[in-house]
Length: 340
Image 1 (tube, rainbow, N blue to C red):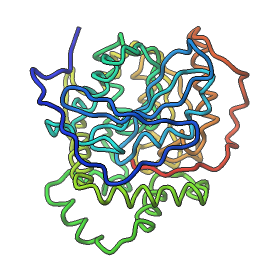
Image 2: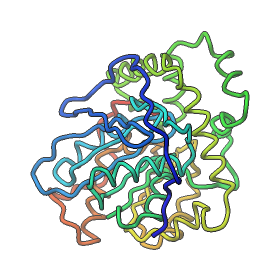
Image 3: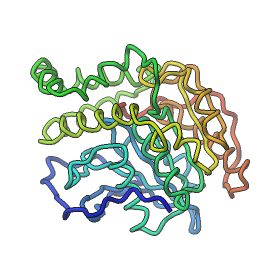
């Protein structure tokens, strides 16, 4: 079976924490120490024993908190965990400094292998969508179903609004950006991220906005924050240029797991037009398009995404708990903000 493990991995490197990470009601955090990495894992107690496991993977600049709105919607369906990728959230940087798509995928595989939870229902947003696509392609034994929310798969014509994020990958751009924005407050930064990632920023509650500002203040104190952002952005750009069997679209074609694709019509980072290409690439796919959603549909419309996932389980014969609800996009305002 193909492997994404390197020949050797240096010992784990744990950096000091700057501040406590916010934990929502019903959630718990724990640290998992693995060869070369330490991951923070966010989980919720399952509604009952015996539920199938699920793993959620966030996007660029995000964290496991990005799934805190969706996870409660699926408490009675899966036993869910969300990880902070190395260098994000409360996880320290990887010892080898590898922030490539393959490096992040290796962290996911290493966690699943060590936990013995596979196969899982695997979720990914943006960068996390590219990461879990690679995991599903090279380790099909670990994946029951795949749910991709605005996955960062290669685009020939990138949207103009996504260009600044891509520019983070260029040498020197992060240093320039940090100098130019030195006087920006955490509140200003969060408003910018919200405007970029949400179809309707007004869906973010006041409490959610305050929580996001606190989290931004915490992240800006981390000595590796911008390095993790730049290297991960570079990892996305590099993955866009890889061809052959390692190309993400070729790997999407190799995914065997039933796949749910979620795209937002107001997404400024991943082109809405890519939805149909993705539906053709993944051999066993279902497509949910939300015209008013932005880049983080699982935060803007968690009930709708949860309904689509339940329907995926029903289509594939997986057991699901709870009544199916109408997929009208009338969820409560989202409670958090995220990166791309």
